[in-house]
Length: 105
Image (cartoon, rainbow, N blue to C red):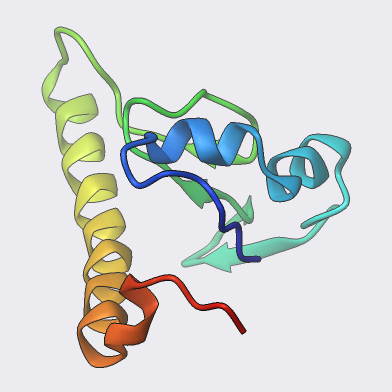
């Protein structure tokens, strides 16, 4: 899913909240009843977000505030996973510089 047309200074969470993907996830159109097995645990497919994103059943974000060691470890690992995705987009923009400028095509 691709969403373009927002100014660069608008936070990702706001763009996401106003996207078709957000609406489809809310309506259960994406990932309806799909589950994956990690180890011996079956879990739903989720999207990873930073603390600014809204907490939703299909969106996982790190804990905030005063945390015990278990929640702190969870938040650290979740953020580490999200950074892999952010780095991938950085590499895409570095490889295809045309993604950084407006295209009239």
